[in-house]
Length: 291
Image (cartoon, rainbow, N blue to C red; front, top):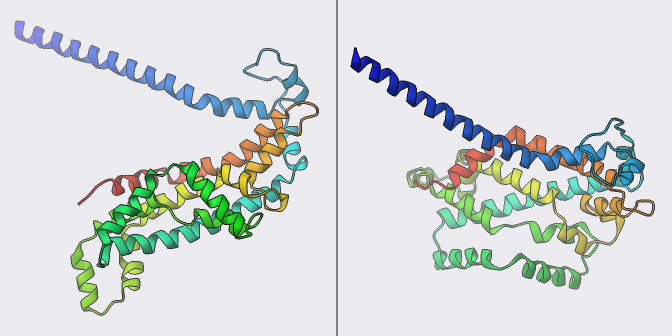
């Protein structure tokens, strides 16, 4: 009887510790979630506040009793936000497509082909990741300017059609595919390009999807390079449009309209991430696992 009572006490104490641990964990996760989501809530709230009411707030209010959609109308009428969205879409699609083609061929060469100095070349290639982005931007700016490609889609796109990190990520995935498949394909007379498209790419589809999504997000959020290389509204991206809306307040910054534009721009990326989040995690996990 005594042993049974002691067992019940131990079991009860273990359940109590588990409950307390779960309460602490979920409390911390709740606080962290609020901190992460608050900027999005503030962005959405500001986008539905009246311009005059927003500027009259000496102390920011965390709610509004008179929401309005006028800021969304202003975001599209104050500047050519629709055109900027179209330019950004074209820029994103072309850049992502070209980059995917370039990095796929480069990753295949480093992972499967044999040539003199391959390891040295790949090491030097990886060392490029150590160069600060600011130096790369300056070099690209001078090169594009000297080539006369400012205020062109070519000038916007060309510096972004490759990525050392994505080549490395894809190369590691290609290297995980057994060599026996490649040798069997060569015995059957399969060309390298056909082996790449019919065998390697389908196997590495999760990583490819991850790279595409991350590149789309990178292009969609691009700010510094478009601001440097374009001053013609015909080639503005959404980053230029947001800045233009911000500066178009009537004597003051039009923050509500700018937030409305940010909401419009952010929704496609949020939806894209939510739809493909499992693919992204799977692709990153495959890229970080060897063997």
